[in-house]
Image (cartoon, rainbow, N blue to C red; front, side, top):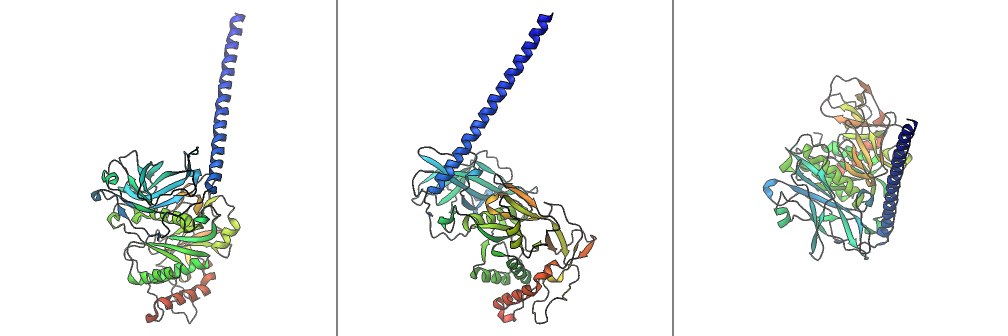
Length: 467
């Protein structure tokens, strides 16, 4: 009996020893694979930076518009494509004797939320009109669909080139998938956006703030709010603005043209009229993602504030947004999340601080001084200043996916807030408190708004229309 018990103990001992040994071998294998993969990616980055890149089309104007893909009755549309040099967001990179992965193509489209196809491909075309097909590594609807039948899609195709300098880069790209047969027979090509200055492709991003503004629609006509918005963010340190319009009044277009001539803004037609009823808020998710990629890839801005025209990101303990980012960004933050408070249009105007000589006296950031006491939770109507090189997928109120090693930072409510100037109440019975924070910009803001309105509307003696 003792011999049988001893045999049982030996059996258990050897079984457990075998399991431990197998576990150690598996862990060793995973460790080796991880180490090899890390070394491969490090070698790839070094080799990637040693190549000399030439823009396939030096005369590219960087303007885009929505184009139908294949069968027009399906209402599938494609807008833009960007050459993204970040190899750490690609799952399967290649580095052998002949080829290496130099980056990826990021494409934005509007497609059915539930597309039947399991395979989507990119057809790339070169300057000599040769082409080949690349299977997409990522293809799917982005967040914030809100039960609509169509959605903003993000498609990523890895790009491999031969080991030669300069590498041969594609000029155009189209999408192809089986449920839209014409997408392969007659591809809808769009031009790929590369950096304006190819020599800065791997340089450190410029520590500048750009502003991505939500789409202007429903014949947007609030000229004074538009001018005040731009000048307020300029005082906060912003150097460039990206506007997308579905429909805007002639006066608004004059203001946008003015800022475009000054080199302060890019203005793009956002012709999504065919999808205004079946995609969320005029395709705002596609627009914000296009804007963030444009700020990163094309213009090399480090930061992009993703906001609407009635929203102001307001630091409470720093002189400006630029000062806050300069002091608080440690380099691995994908986005600074500012929590929301409301100011309501129905509240009475307080124009006490408007100087007597000012023509445009009713500025919303200066005349609305009572806000909601309650600060909404993070990611609920909050807005974000993002590090453009960290973003893979951007949402309306939060970062949905960032590059490896980056995380969000929720700005404490005593350090900064999102001032949201709503035309309509969310809850008109909420407790309001007086907040004069925005008035510290008042003196400069009044002068700048009057100066811009005078330049654009001289025939009106510098009066900007307030809708």
